[in-house]
Image 1 (cartoon, rainbow, N blue to C red):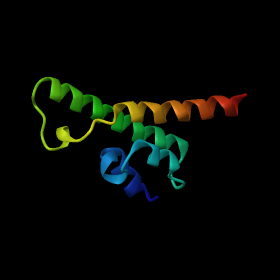
Image 2: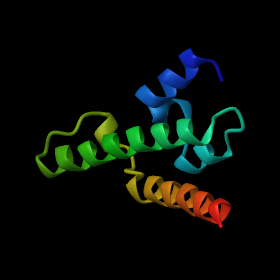
Image 3: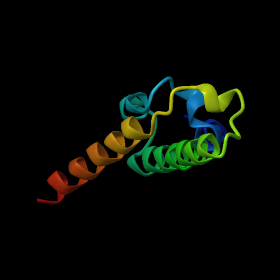
Image 4: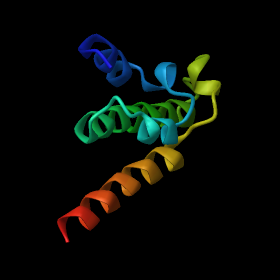
Length: 86
């Protein structure tokens, strides 16, 4: 993936990936890039939840919030790293 595409994925992960587990499956992203994409997505998902709590949702806020899936994908990356260090 080119730097430009990686930057786009970090800026708007849900536009580049249908679901968080697709980030893990992306062969052309490094582990660090996957973490950045997922952390960005996690931040966006949390903001959507906050907006929904304040009744400030827009079209994106109506999408299913994928925070649990994002956090699961981040845990998978953490476990992979831990197993490599053993």
